Length: 178
Ligand code: C2E
Ligand code: C2E
Image (cartoon, rainbow, N blue to C red; front, side):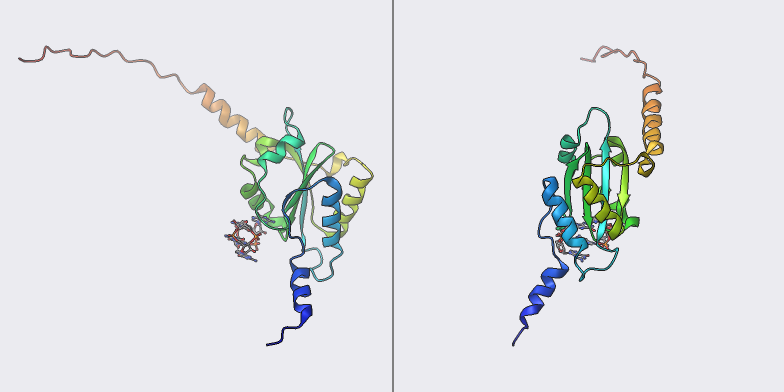
């Protein structure tokens, strides 16, 4: 049976990124921009981009090792001491679910805040800002303080738990019968 040649082109157009994981900034930007320009993919449904700021003491580069992207089309890079992830076809409401699968640690333990873009035009503008090294504005940053506080409270509770007192007991309190 004859299969039209453009079927292959159509399929590869629908699953365009045959890559996953870390990419240098320039390659990451090219890959994401090529997705945004792909008219075969639904408008504003191509994926989510998120920029995570690591907690003090952890560099964005180090945080790469915590991130295990499994889905083809999920890519990441480092810029402005943030870990930038692009999560292919992920919906904004599923971001927490996706991050939970992707990171070994709870996200709020490794990152103090993050910024999310999910519309094509916003993702494209942000990629262009990265190329010009324009820093993110403070107002765009979503803080995750509540999550961090919860962790701290649990930790305190663990710390204040009463110490178990040793209870004396005697071995062989009775003489064994012969
Ligand atoms: P893929 O999309 O590149 O995903 C590779 C692996 O990442 C998956 O291997 C799975 O371990 C993990 N993964 C990706 N997305 C998700 C997700 O939304 N939830 C969960 N729990 N895990 C996810 P797996 O399962 O062996 O699948 C291999 C390939 O089969 C996938 O490659 C994808 O091309 C296809 N596939 C499997 N299940 C589905 C599905 O429900 N929908 C779609 N559209 N494709 C699927
Ligand atoms: P789920 O595993 O609970 O994931 C819910 C949604 O979270 C997914 O919706 C997707 O939007 C996002 N998500 C989860 N993990 C990843 C990820 O590794 N990368 C990205 N980019 N997004 C992720 P979606 O794609 O509509 O999938 C719905 C459900 O279908 C998933 O629920 C899962 O049960 C199943 N599924 C989808 N793809 C795969 C796959 O490749 N392998 C397996 N085993 N299951 C899959």
